[in-house]
Image 1 (cartoon, rainbow, N blue to C red):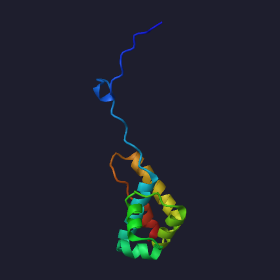
Image 2 (spheres, rainbow, N blue to C red):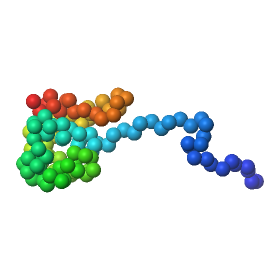
Image 3 (spheres, rainbow, N blue to C red):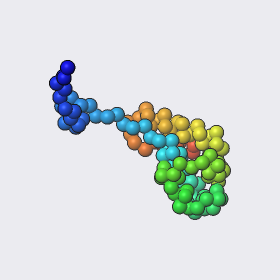
Image 4 (cartoon, helix red, strand yellow):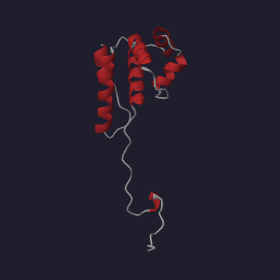
Length: 118
């Protein structure tokens, strides 16, 4: 019972292939954007915020760029250094992710975090 199945072709060769939907941003990327935005709103250098949070400037930079997945303790330390509560930060990141999903533009903003930190 051998059936004749055509060989699989890559999706890019298929004439009826649809473009893949935009990927949802990762939480760590949205968190990093919020941290960076809050730090810039305060007019602080990376080293100043890192010192108060008790982390290295390199590590904080990696968090802000979404390269590192920080522990809850590290998130709390950086949030504290930026004078924002974990609840407010979490809400801001969630709103940022919601905005990114609902909009067609890339690069979610953390305007909610800015308002909460004021």
